Image 1: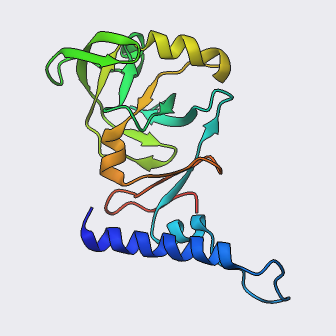
Image 2: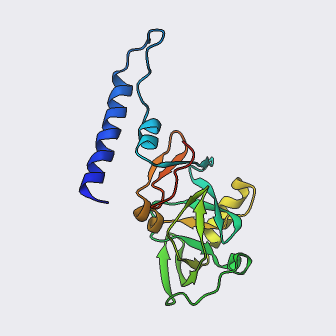
Amino acid sequence: MGVHHKSRVAAWLFLAIYLSACAPMHTEIGAAAPPTVAQALCALGYSSIPLRTLPSGHHVVEVNLNGRLATFVVDSGAGRTVIHQPYTSSFGLRAGGGPVGTAIGAGGSTAVSRVGINHLTIASTRTALTGIFALDLSHVVKALEPIVGSPVHGVIGQDVMQAQHPIIDVQQARLYLNPLPGERRTGC
């Protein structure tokens, strides 16, 4: 993210927060309401994506992976986007997109392999990913599937976050992502 872009985002966010906090309690008839943070982000070109908040505090989002719908957990602490290993074949994924290694996290350590993908969109916002990682997410799946009420297929991680400059509004359960160059924003 360039310095100019960071400055512009920071200025818009500051303005929206300042105006929201300083707005009078009553507005005159016909007076325009101050812009919200959501309006400021939409004005900056971000896509607005709804998240589902689970009672556990986790957020899940619907994604399209290689033409099939899936449910992924949004995890800003995950280094990479990963799919639960047993789901790789149902999404047409094959190992071989990179070296096999070991992932270490709260659930312990497990073998990991890179898998190539055709496309991954979050809601209707396309990502630039050409590969994700496959590993055993049994500890995540077993904990969250009963709460979600359907399969949890994977985790959206920092590779998406870094590439598309996200802003997560936890209170409103929204994920704001910059669309890829040439793509239109959605959800605003």
